[in-house]
Every structure is written in C-alpha cells, then in structure tokens.
Length: 497
Image (cartoon, rainbow, N blue to C red; front, side, top):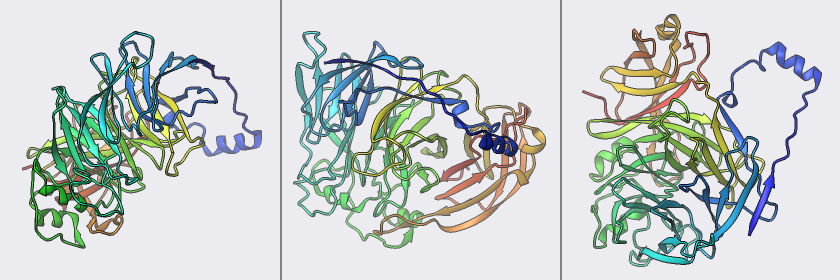
C-alpha cells in the first residue's frame, strides 16, 4: 500500500479588537518557543491510525514508525515545509505491542512483549520477509502493564531493553522473570540482566560516552519522574522488582528491611545497592509522565544543545532538556522545559537526516494534552539562537551557569536576579510524593566571566540528595532578551570537593 498526502494550508484570523488588546499588552512582541523551534504536522491518510510507539531513521532519510497495534510503516518525503507528497508504506505487521524501534546494519529491530525481533527485507519489495527472534526468555504473564521497551544500541553494538513491572498481580518470580529490570542484549542474542527496581521505564537512551539511561514514571515508590543511569549492581528503588534478586544472574541482592516514609536520600543510605536518579523531573513543573530519551548528535543542526538529552512527556505533550555531568564518578545534572504544545502525547523522538526532530505521538491508554489522539510532527530549528541556560553545573560553593548568548553584565551580576530553593521527596509505597523539606537558599554572589557567557553563583546551604530549583528571572542577554525558560532544576546528589 502506497499513499500520498498533501497538507492544505490555512490562515489564522484574529479579531481586530483582540489584536489591539494584545498589542497594547505587548504580548504579540514577546518571544515564544515557536520563534526558535517550529512544529510542522505531517499529514496522515484518514484510514491510517498512526499511533506511534517507535521511530527509527533509515540511511536514505526515510523514517520507520512502529505502531502500538502491531505494524511498522515507513514514511518518506518528510522534510518539506509545508510537507507535500508524504508517503506511507507498510513494512511489517502482526507484532505484539511493539514499544520501540531501532535500525542497525540493514535491519530494523523491535521489542515485542515476549521477544526482541529483527525485521529483514530480502527481496527488496519494501516488505519485511523475515521476522527473526534475536532474544527472548523474560517473563510474561498477561498482566496489562507488562510493557517491554527498546531496543537502543550502544557504541559497542549492545541493545538495551527495559521491562515494566506488572501491577496489581502477585506471581512467582519465575513467571514474570526480570520484570522491573534492564537487560543488555549482545549482537549474538545472548543477554543478561543489568539493574533492577524500575516501575514504568518508558524511555531508553544512550549518551555520547556510551552509557545507557532510562526514564521512570511517578507511582508507588517513585515520587516523581526521573532519569536513571543503568549499570550493573544498581537498585533503582521500585520494591516489587527485588524478588528477582533470587534468580540466577541477578547483579545485586538485598534481603533487608524496606524503610517507609523516610526522605529519599535517607532511604538510599539504608539500602546499600540503591542509587539516586541522575535527574529528578519535578512533577507538573517539568512533565508528568516521562517517555523517550534522545541524544542531540546533530552537531549543531538542531541548535546550541549538542550532546544533551531531550526527554518526552506523555501527559503534558511536551519535551524537556537534560544537561548531565559527572561528579565523584556519578551522573547528575539539570532539567529544563524545552518545547510545549504538541498535538498529542509525546512517546518517541528521533533526529532526521536534516537535523530536525521527528516526534511520534499517541495517547492510547491515557489522557494527554493536545487536539489529536496520535500523529507525527517535525520540530525544526529556525537558525535563531534562543537565550537559554545552556549548562547548569555544580561547584563546591554553588553553581556555574553557561548561557547560549552573552548576558547583560549588570543584570547577571546582581544576586537578586536569581532565586533558589531546595527540596526532596518521600520514599514510600504511596503513589508519588509532594516536595518536602523545602528551604529557600541565599545567593551570596553572582560573578560574570570575562567572556560574558558564564556566571558563577555562590550559594549558602547546598544539600546533597536534593533538587535545587533555580529561577533566573532577572537575567537578560546583552541585547535585552529575557530567558526563554528561566527555570532550571538541578539534582545535586553530590557536592564537588
């Protein structure tokens, strides 16, 4: 099946009276996300429910999309503005709820509920001729929540998979083996469990150094959404996954007491294999249900954030940005809002051939903001640099910020231009957690570097294991711009020494 679509262009009419009010208020002249990152909606045939659950870029620039109901389609001519003659071709079908997609060495790889599958086209007719099992063997009981995500390839050719914990059903560990754990699959199909304690690990990503991460979603034992570094011997906090420590191959064990109602940092001290997330996403402030993790490897084609992560969000239909650094050998860092207003829940992202980002959406199963139930949009950098906090790094006595444009030295050197607070969360079986133990922090000094792109903040009262929320509302660029997103949230697991 080959379908061609054309997008009809329209115009937005604003009543004259409303336009006068907007002009008087100065609203129409304010910068917006759309000034820097434009959304382009790709047309979809009326009879194709493109509920995107996986995206992969093909060498010729086309984009493969897995659909949650079991198909894989390939979209061509996706880079037009407006998008004309977009094509859709069905490549594969009959899969069991694929929730990820990757391309490697001529084939597409997809995780179904029960296996990792390689899709191979042999006779060059645009259809998959072989569905080859690469890896299988984890437990599946039929629980609705037993999602399997991935794969994502690391630089060594390993494929990373994350398995949802089953909810509301108690079974033997051998029946739902490795639910709530990450798996690393070698090229030959052999696999091993790596880390455990995941609740709903909906997104998997690999950074420029080759380290693998996943996002988890708020629930019991998970106070808010988080980004976590997967490595051997680590417990990520979700208690139900501990039962698999009894299985051969488990990389850690813990048979001790599970503390209830402590702060999260205190709980980590009580449970030896447990580690703090690299980044917390404060609830509602930076999304409500984190999804995909994609690395900006475009070399500047997508703007000034090369090497950083972008993270999707289901409920609020947005994308956030994450800057990571290593302190005392462990990852920690900051998150920022990046782009809101997608037409449906953001589930998968991939960078296209031209450096734009393709965003796959579906709200099947849960509610989300937006006007559609599914779709495919393209996010394109305008070439204009937004005034943003580019990096947010920990220092022994505070933080250092770098910016995408030079700052106004007078505004940026005033301590009153910054407000900071810190807080943490409960570790408990209750669903989610409020922010607790909140304290306002004093900014002692703000020193602008000679290059005008960096500011060093001296802060009283830094606390390890706490989120440090920054409002840089008084900072302006040298040419008078306000910060597009003046808030940043740094997860300070360790203070540099």
